[in-house]
Amino acid sequence: MKTTRTIVCTGLIFVLTLATLLVGCGDKNQSGSTVDEPKITVEYLEGDYVKQLLRDGAEHVFGSIEVSKAKDGSVLVNIEAKEYVEDTEQPNGFYIEDKNYSLSSVLAPEARCTFISGDVSLPQIMTTEEFVEAYNKDINEYGGKNNPDYQKHKLYDMYIMGDQIELILERYIPY
Image 1 (cartoon, helix red, strand yellow):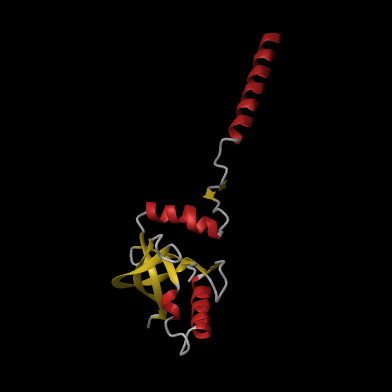
Image 2 (tube, rainbow, N blue to C red):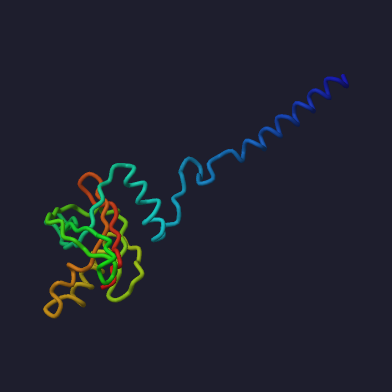
């Protein structure tokens, strides 16, 4: 009888210890069956998120843009492709080369965007709607008759998946 009790107690202790150890084996970023999304920061978007999009097959395009609303209400982005070329002989150590081609794509409604307003050099994270509003306000305020080429000097990294832009990152380029 005493031996049976010892075996049962030892078995019970073993099962409880095993159950306690297994509780810590889950994914640390997981809540229930859903993986928690990391905090969305500019650093995350420019780093891990870009890597994920490229790994998933996104195309990277760099250039200036013109944003408009399509008849169906979607946001259409016309892109003038450019290339950032490092050159130590240039005053700022680089120049922007026109690639002589353009393309159009739809900005996904759930796209992630960063935007730099006016003479500020730090990008702000925005939704698609906020990005379009900030873009239009910025062009109206700093472009226009006095500076018609303003929007051509604002440059963006875009990541296109299929037929939609999933990420737009405005790049600060000192002139």
